[in-house]
Length: 102
Image (tube, rainbow, N blue to C red; front, top):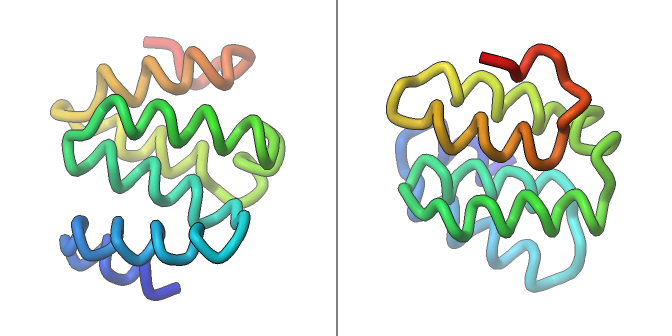
């Protein structure tokens, strides 16, 4: 999708705007979890955590796994600058995941 392309190009703020526009139209699991990831990369920890939590409440933890949101969060968490926040989100929302342990 366009938001993911923008995100992968490093145009994180533009991707955030895109995801926010999509979500203004209605619930969308991929856009919600990708928005959380974009907020995290942009350094907005509070919004990242809140967006992931809302995504789990609205769409479910299983849906997040199914669409790859958990894998994306684990991957970004391998980067030192995002490791602590990503690990915190994983532990809070997917505590059963053994792969998210340090």
